[in-house]
Image (cartoon, rainbow, N blue to C red; front, side):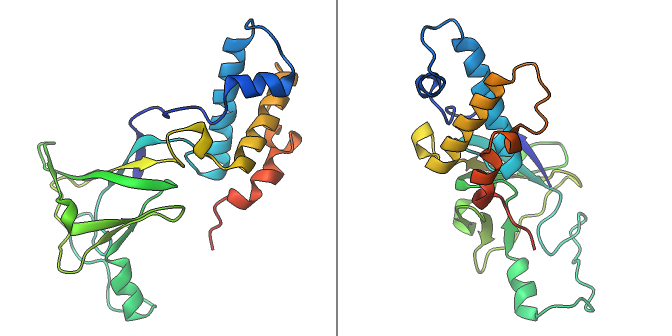
Length: 211
Protein backbone atom coordinates (compact mmCIF):
# COMPACT_ATOMS: atom_id res chain seq x y z
CA UNK A 1 0.00 0.00 0.00
CA UNK A 2 1.32 3.42 -0.89
CA UNK A 3 0.05 7.00 -1.00
CA UNK A 4 0.32 9.67 -3.67
CA UNK A 5 -0.87 13.24 -3.08
CA UNK A 6 -2.63 14.35 -6.27
CA UNK A 7 -3.51 17.95 -5.41
CA UNK A 8 -2.14 20.57 -3.06
CA UNK A 9 -4.14 21.45 0.06
CA UNK A 10 -7.07 23.73 -0.74
CA UNK A 11 -5.88 26.25 1.87
CA UNK A 12 -3.35 26.68 4.62
CA UNK A 13 -4.75 26.04 8.13
CA UNK A 14 -3.63 29.50 9.30
CA UNK A 15 -4.33 32.93 7.83
CA UNK A 16 -1.36 35.22 7.24
CA UNK A 17 -3.20 38.02 9.05
CA UNK A 18 -3.63 36.02 12.25
CA UNK A 19 0.02 34.96 12.20
CA UNK A 20 1.13 38.60 11.84
CA UNK A 21 -1.22 39.60 14.65
CA UNK A 22 0.18 36.81 16.85
CA UNK A 23 3.74 37.96 16.14
CA UNK A 24 2.78 41.67 16.38
CA UNK A 25 4.13 42.41 12.91
CA UNK A 26 3.05 45.25 10.63
CA UNK A 27 3.66 45.82 6.96
CA UNK A 28 4.13 43.29 4.18
CA UNK A 29 7.92 42.98 3.96
CA UNK A 30 7.98 39.55 5.59
CA UNK A 31 4.74 38.19 4.13
CA UNK A 32 6.46 35.73 1.77
CA UNK A 33 8.73 34.43 4.53
CA UNK A 34 5.78 34.03 6.91
CA UNK A 35 3.83 32.16 4.23
CA UNK A 36 6.72 29.73 3.88
CA UNK A 37 6.81 29.24 7.67
CA UNK A 38 3.07 28.52 7.73
CA UNK A 39 3.54 25.85 5.05
CA UNK A 40 6.53 24.38 6.89
CA UNK A 41 4.61 24.28 10.18
CA UNK A 42 1.64 22.59 8.52
CA UNK A 43 3.91 19.96 6.99
CA UNK A 44 5.58 19.29 10.36
CA UNK A 45 2.25 18.94 12.16
CA UNK A 46 0.72 16.74 9.47
CA UNK A 47 3.68 14.36 9.57
CA UNK A 48 3.70 14.38 13.38
CA UNK A 49 -0.02 13.58 13.62
CA UNK A 50 -0.48 11.48 10.50
CA UNK A 51 -3.29 13.85 9.51
CA UNK A 52 -4.29 15.92 6.51
CA UNK A 53 -5.40 19.29 7.87
CA UNK A 54 -7.14 20.91 4.90
CA UNK A 55 -8.64 19.06 1.95
CA UNK A 56 -6.56 17.54 -0.81
CA UNK A 57 -6.94 14.60 -3.21
CA UNK A 58 -4.91 11.53 -2.28
CA UNK A 59 -4.55 8.26 -4.19
CA UNK A 60 -4.19 5.05 -2.16
CA UNK A 61 -2.60 2.22 -4.16
CA UNK A 62 -3.09 -1.44 -3.27
CA UNK A 63 -1.50 -4.56 -4.73
CA UNK A 64 -4.41 -6.79 -3.68
CA UNK A 65 -7.69 -6.65 -1.80
CA UNK A 66 -8.02 -7.83 1.83
CA UNK A 67 -8.11 -11.61 2.05
CA UNK A 68 -6.10 -12.05 -1.12
CA UNK A 69 -2.45 -12.15 -2.10
CA UNK A 70 -1.17 -10.14 -5.05
CA UNK A 71 -1.90 -13.07 -7.40
CA UNK A 72 -5.53 -13.21 -6.21
CA UNK A 73 -5.24 -16.38 -4.15
CA UNK A 74 -6.67 -16.56 -0.59
CA UNK A 75 -4.22 -15.62 2.17
CA UNK A 76 -5.78 -17.64 4.99
CA UNK A 77 -4.19 -21.05 5.47
CA UNK A 78 -6.86 -22.38 7.82
CA UNK A 79 -4.58 -22.30 10.86
CA UNK A 80 -4.51 -18.59 11.67
CA UNK A 81 -5.66 -17.43 15.08
CA UNK A 82 -8.79 -15.32 15.39
CA UNK A 83 -12.54 -15.59 15.33
CA UNK A 84 -14.22 -16.43 12.03
CA UNK A 85 -16.48 -13.30 12.18
CA UNK A 86 -13.37 -11.12 12.54
CA UNK A 87 -11.79 -12.76 9.49
CA UNK A 88 -14.99 -12.22 7.53
CA UNK A 89 -15.16 -8.54 8.47
CA UNK A 90 -11.49 -8.01 7.59
CA UNK A 91 -12.07 -9.41 4.11
CA UNK A 92 -14.79 -6.81 3.48
CA UNK A 93 -12.88 -3.77 4.75
CA UNK A 94 -9.93 -1.73 3.47
CA UNK A 95 -8.40 0.57 6.09
CA UNK A 96 -7.36 3.83 4.44
CA UNK A 97 -3.90 5.02 5.59
CA UNK A 98 -4.75 8.72 5.47
CA UNK A 99 -7.08 10.62 7.79
CA UNK A 100 -9.57 12.14 8.09
CA UNK A 101 -11.38 11.17 4.89
CA UNK A 102 -14.68 12.72 3.81
CA UNK A 103 -15.26 11.19 0.37
CA UNK A 104 -14.13 8.57 -2.11
CA UNK A 105 -13.87 10.08 -5.59
CA UNK A 106 -13.45 6.75 -7.35
CA UNK A 107 -11.99 3.26 -7.16
CA UNK A 108 -10.00 2.42 -10.29
CA UNK A 109 -8.89 -1.06 -11.29
CA UNK A 110 -5.81 -1.09 -13.50
CA UNK A 111 -5.37 -3.63 -16.27
CA UNK A 112 -2.04 -5.15 -17.30
CA UNK A 113 -1.59 -2.46 -19.98
CA UNK A 114 -2.14 0.33 -17.43
CA UNK A 115 -5.63 1.28 -18.54
CA UNK A 116 -8.13 1.81 -15.76
CA UNK A 117 -11.79 1.01 -15.22
CA UNK A 118 -13.98 2.51 -12.51
CA UNK A 119 -15.52 0.13 -9.98
CA UNK A 120 -19.12 1.22 -9.55
CA UNK A 121 -19.75 3.09 -6.31
CA UNK A 122 -22.85 0.98 -5.65
CA UNK A 123 -20.47 -1.84 -4.63
CA UNK A 124 -18.98 -0.10 -1.60
CA UNK A 125 -19.38 2.65 0.95
CA UNK A 126 -17.05 4.87 2.95
CA UNK A 127 -16.57 4.83 6.70
CA UNK A 128 -15.48 8.50 7.04
CA UNK A 129 -13.59 10.32 9.76
CA UNK A 130 -10.46 9.55 11.75
CA UNK A 131 -10.49 5.78 11.24
CA UNK A 132 -11.58 5.75 7.61
CA UNK A 133 -12.11 2.72 5.46
CA UNK A 134 -13.79 1.35 2.36
CA UNK A 135 -16.40 -1.32 3.01
CA UNK A 136 -17.43 -3.76 0.31
CA UNK A 137 -21.19 -4.22 0.33
CA UNK A 138 -22.76 -7.62 0.84
CA UNK A 139 -23.19 -9.41 -2.47
CA UNK A 140 -20.42 -7.46 -4.20
CA UNK A 141 -17.11 -9.04 -5.20
CA UNK A 142 -13.69 -7.42 -5.24
CA UNK A 143 -12.71 -6.74 -8.89
CA UNK A 144 -9.42 -8.38 -9.89
CA UNK A 145 -6.57 -6.02 -10.85
CA UNK A 146 -4.47 -6.82 -13.90
CA UNK A 147 -1.21 -5.59 -12.36
CA UNK A 148 0.77 -7.32 -9.62
CA UNK A 149 1.76 -3.99 -8.03
CA UNK A 150 -0.43 -0.88 -7.61
CA UNK A 151 -3.28 -2.50 -9.51
CA UNK A 152 -5.95 -0.84 -7.33
CA UNK A 153 -6.23 2.94 -6.93
CA UNK A 154 -8.62 4.48 -4.40
CA UNK A 155 -8.85 8.27 -4.78
CA UNK A 156 -10.10 10.08 -1.67
CA UNK A 157 -10.64 13.56 -0.30
CA UNK A 158 -8.55 13.82 2.86
CA UNK A 159 -8.69 16.66 5.37
CA UNK A 160 -10.94 18.34 7.93
CA UNK A 161 -12.48 20.50 5.20
CA UNK A 162 -11.59 22.98 2.45
CA UNK A 163 -11.04 25.99 4.73
CA UNK A 164 -8.74 26.99 7.58
CA UNK A 165 -11.91 27.35 9.65
CA UNK A 166 -12.55 23.59 9.40
CA UNK A 167 -9.36 22.73 11.30
CA UNK A 168 -9.86 22.16 15.05
CA UNK A 169 -9.04 25.21 17.16
CA UNK A 170 -6.47 23.34 19.28
CA UNK A 171 -4.49 22.32 16.19
CA UNK A 172 -4.58 25.89 14.89
CA UNK A 173 -3.32 27.19 18.23
CA UNK A 174 -0.46 24.68 18.13
CA UNK A 175 0.37 25.83 14.61
CA UNK A 176 0.52 29.45 15.75
CA UNK A 177 2.92 28.49 18.54
CA UNK A 178 5.05 26.51 16.12
CA UNK A 179 5.19 29.32 13.54
CA UNK A 180 6.21 31.76 16.28
CA UNK A 181 8.99 29.41 17.35
CA UNK A 182 10.22 28.91 13.78
CA UNK A 183 10.17 32.68 13.23
CA UNK A 184 12.09 33.42 16.43
CA UNK A 185 14.69 30.70 15.77
CA UNK A 186 15.31 31.17 12.07
CA UNK A 187 18.60 29.58 11.10
CA UNK A 188 18.60 27.21 14.06
CA UNK A 189 18.18 23.45 13.98
CA UNK A 190 14.43 22.86 14.11
CA UNK A 191 14.54 19.15 14.87
CA UNK A 192 12.94 19.73 18.30
CA UNK A 193 10.68 22.61 17.28
CA UNK A 194 7.41 20.81 18.04
CA UNK A 195 8.47 20.10 21.61
CA UNK A 196 10.32 23.36 22.21
CA UNK A 197 7.37 25.45 21.02
CA UNK A 198 4.88 23.63 23.26
CA UNK A 199 2.89 22.54 20.20
CA UNK A 200 3.52 18.82 20.74
CA UNK A 201 1.69 18.82 24.07
CA UNK A 202 -1.38 20.50 22.60
CA UNK A 203 -1.38 18.09 19.67
CA UNK A 204 -1.14 14.98 21.83
CA UNK A 205 -4.89 14.12 21.72
CA UNK A 206 -4.80 14.12 17.91
CA UNK A 207 -1.95 11.65 17.46
CA UNK A 208 -2.95 8.29 16.06
CA UNK A 209 -2.62 5.53 18.59
CA UNK A 210 -1.82 2.00 17.42
CA UNK A 211 -2.28 -1.06 19.59
